Image (tube, rainbow, N blue to C red; front, side, top):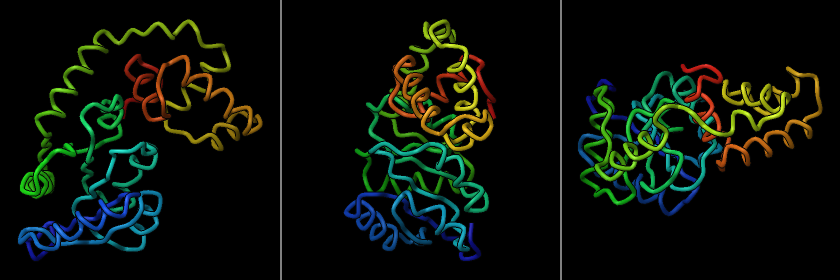
Length: 216
């Protein structure tokens, strides 16, 4: 934490009304201090400019690029990440794999938000009760780590899937395999369909759960 013993919080949200509301709440909490706020796509640049938060609160109610989320701790010099989520979303396990320290339900009260940020700053891993229930359901559904898609990927798709699981961008994959960027995009689109997921983050988490790619 900062020398003042207040938890410095950076808020990342693409919805301004959420961002402004949460920043006002943080500003009025005795134990919290606002370190900054930005749209999600702009947060890495802002964090690298020298902002030193203890916790980054990411509004994940809408789809968020999990590759970006994985970069937040290093951009913010090892800050913890808390995800504000809708419990019914289907990529909660992907957020766990991305290194999120805590989950806060969008149904949480202001008091619960403050408590969650305080606990994460202390090194704990709090999770709203409804989100915890949803996570347990996801784990049970994925128990055994065996998915029917494994035999449905072509040789090239399997090669690209491993790089997706390793967190590489489409551009990096194209460079690694010496193929066109448009070709990579087509293969990734096909992989997402075969995995029955909606984002690269979900795909990476599902692939890693079967032993494809790194597990860090």
